[in-house]
Length: 167
Image (tube, rainbow, N blue to C red; front, side, top):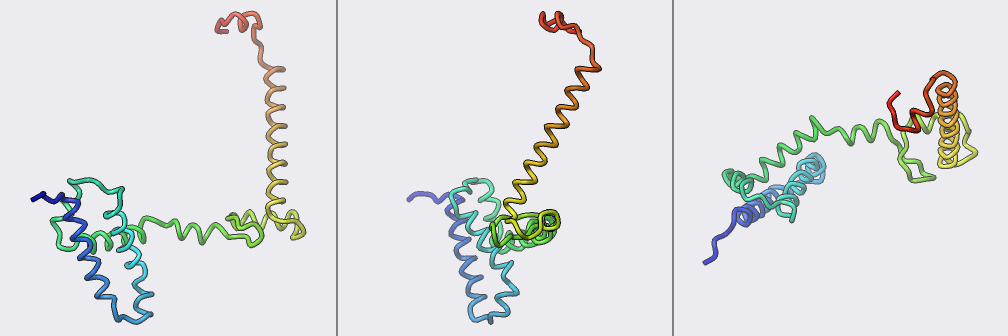
């Protein structure tokens, strides 16, 4: 008889853990389900990761098999981690908005600035292009000024440069 790998055993345990969790959720009201949505998502994310093709570490599987419910343990820690360390949703809500015309995400301050500068008569994507062209012109002017300054104020020996000699 073929011996099961730690990963196979872990997959079986995770399936049982998920079934127990689903049974606990069965019959709960919609309000409770909404309250538990972060936990439910965490269970699904952890389960999908550990049973997917990306997880193939026998040693990590052996470690997780030491626990009766590795799924519950990891899901709980994942929820905590996301609440404490991962503020990507918070950053998204705070700093970006979705513009209905372009379906692009833009910082709120930029949208406000563009509406103030160009008014609401032109689409935001056109206003962005105008800003990029303006920034390109400004950058080119700065580079031109820097080059003029360098040529006017920096002395170097053209022959030494042509011969590769350090000046």
